[in-house]
Image (tube, rainbow, N blue to C red; front, side, top):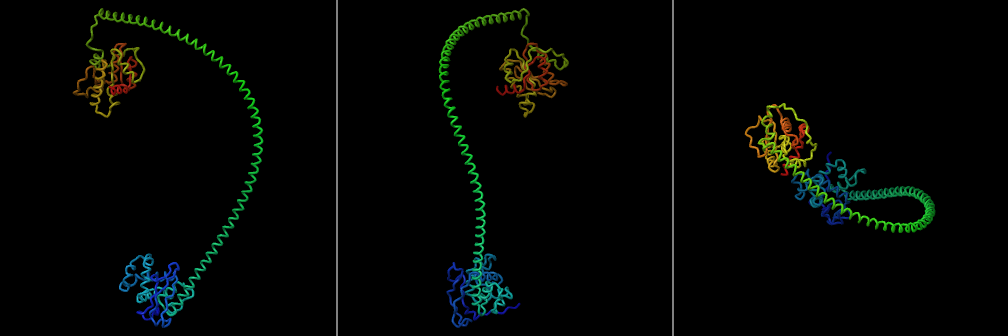
Length: 483
């Protein structure tokens, strides 16, 4: 609806009103104007009067209304100090630009009139009523005072005063309501405290009754303890008398034991002397037995030499394993020999050194079974070379006969020469290395120590039946690592 043009006397002579830029006490929530109106033709008389004291809510509302309409004004109508403020966000414009806005409202009546026109247009009927000098009774007094300050109709000072009185009355009512609310809360807390106190009193009475009952029980227990203490003291006196008696008996027994100990020590000394004489006699007898044993062994050795000469047995050029190496492929069905008495059931890796120390021992190795267990990450050629080289060292150290058996002779080409003392055999087509190992064991004479290294249980059981010593592959691998 169209609004009545707000009353404003000669614009160039507008009364300056101080807001945030006025001198005043910031703790009083009011702003005191130290300027004087310069217009002699205002509605309050020919002489200038000081600006009314604005309540803080009214001052804040004036700044908020002005900040809200700043962006809607053309740029050339906005004073230069307020152009930057007009670009602020809405929530920062009234908070940060309040001093500049108040100063411009006081110093620039034309700017205030432009703001007033926009504010009254937005206020609608309430703005029109304020311009006419009559404010609705139900209207917010703060809003009415702010519009009256900006529009300045006739009697605007009375509207501001009435708004200040209403704000103060509202504040007083709020204080009174707060005091009443606090009083009610204190009364509620007091009632609650009384109820809690009654409950605590009941608990304390119950606790007092329980404590009195416990006190009676403790007194009865104290009387019983005193009676028990007297009885215990009487028993202690009797025990002390018995202890003295037993100490006397123990002293006499200790003297008897010491005498018996001295006699036992004397007998021990005699026994040690007799044992010394017996050890000397035994040593002399052992010397005699050693001499007899040496003479017997010497006699047996001379007899063996004489027997070799009598039978004309010369040193041989070929060993049993050599004959098997020459003819094992043509005779796959040779009958097994009977079990010999030299087989031993042991998997102890330390036994390898003991068995190789026997005279004329023959070491038979299941080649791929050992290499794939010890260094299977290598190629087959590298596995064979590493194993044969290690066995050559064992043959050189022990002087024993060493035979290593591999599968698949038809796949071998250009093999390097074997070290001295090591025989390398490959199974022929139609026969496995396990069968060749068993044939080597059967070819040996009864009584010769034959050591077979393989972790194959079937191989170990087969050679054990023919009198060989089966050992696991780990024993040989550890022996090679040690050397």
